[in-house]
Image (cartoon, rainbow, N blue to C red; front, side, top):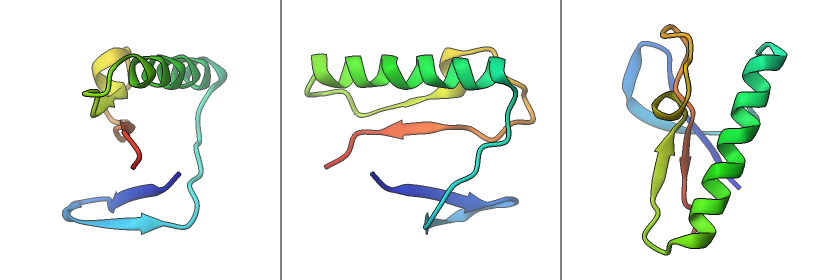
Length: 73
């Protein structure tokens, strides 16, 4: 597993992160857990599955950063 991200306000340089911290309420954490399980299932079911955005699959705060799951190598 790897973590990547952008510095807020600069979407031009993707950086590798050594750790990641989530600041969220229980409702959001449950939605993220459900999203991750859905991604894992879809990955197992399809070799062509590439990535999914949390913001596309759940009602989220528009000011929140996007969470993207990308198939590992």
